[in-house]
Length: 256
Ligand code: BTN
Image 1 (tube, rainbow, N blue to C red):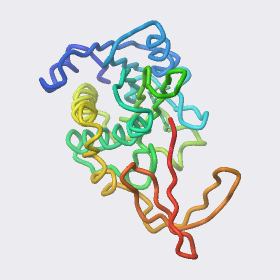
Image 2 (cartoon, helix red, strand yellow; image 1 turned 135 degrees about the vertical axis):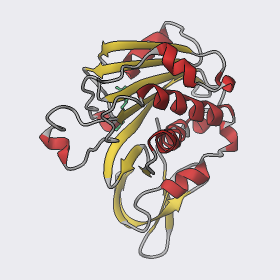
Image 3 (cartoon, rainbow, N blue to C red; image 1 turned 60 degrees about the horizontal axis):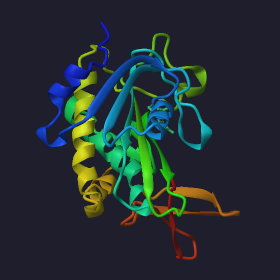
């Protein structure tokens, strides 16, 4: 029996410090991020969580889709009205990645890594990802709202992943249906704790420990330029540090 997301059970796992949070679970939706963006535009307030059993248009970064079949994953979005600067809010994605990895480790007992900037990996395959979308004020000084979307493959869908994902995607391998609500609760706990003290950037040390691909050679295309270099870590804003063959160091940032 697959466990379905249930508001009351999720609440049981929330820490008292999370406080007032709106939670809604739905069976099917186009995308929890799209729905939260619509709700944000209609005025929905800070700290609202939407969880779906299935998404028909699950979104990934760079315009990609996120495979979101019924009942085998967590597809959730948190709506925030951050009192932080847009630059500080670029940390929401990396914060959510660390929160998810920590929660998975606590609940499932495995140790996920993070592929910069937003992918959660287990044994060399992607088990989840984060998509943050935000709306800035006209003068670009304030973040009017941000939606942090988290997708995690809990079990393999019947018949396995589609051909195009088979070599790169995996799941937490939990078919007993007993972890979904606890995992959602723990992700929220971890995230809220970091979010309330975002400017302290407490999670960055842990992001660094979980970073995948340290020492690897990568090629970057940015600003009409292409260059190759070695990944040497992240900086204090969770930007990827790359050392070029001539010793020059560059940082690669990510917007929303
Ligand atoms: C990625 O892998 O590039 C990011 C994936 C983010 C997927 C989550 S699932 C819940 C939320 N709703 C979406 O449409 N996407 C995010």
